[in-house]
Image (cartoon, rainbow, N blue to C red; front, top):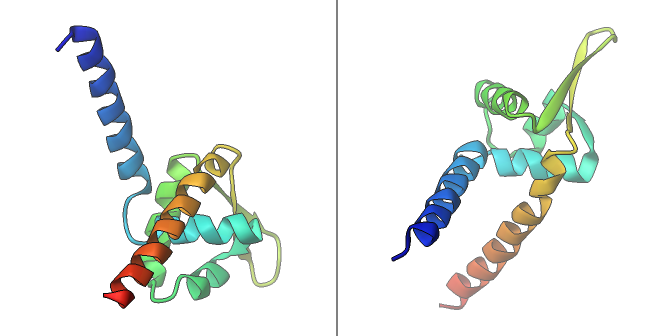
Length: 115
């Protein structure tokens, strides 16, 4: 195997590892998917849409997405104070990946049910 091919392969593996680490977990795809559809959502709305997520876990996932420049957090000057979340332009690049996973998941569920 040539060194050049090996370097490209290593780069792709590292990029895949980075992407999985960034988007991995049970909830990040769900959060992103909801934000694609609603653009801006409040914490409570995200919690309701991500069936089964605890507030603590949602906070952690949102913080990680914000730290990785995929969402923005806005504190709204309302009474009571509300916080809303929105996708960054960078995060919109993940939409095709999420939709591909949804398509695969739907096909897989159908295949398993047919079994």
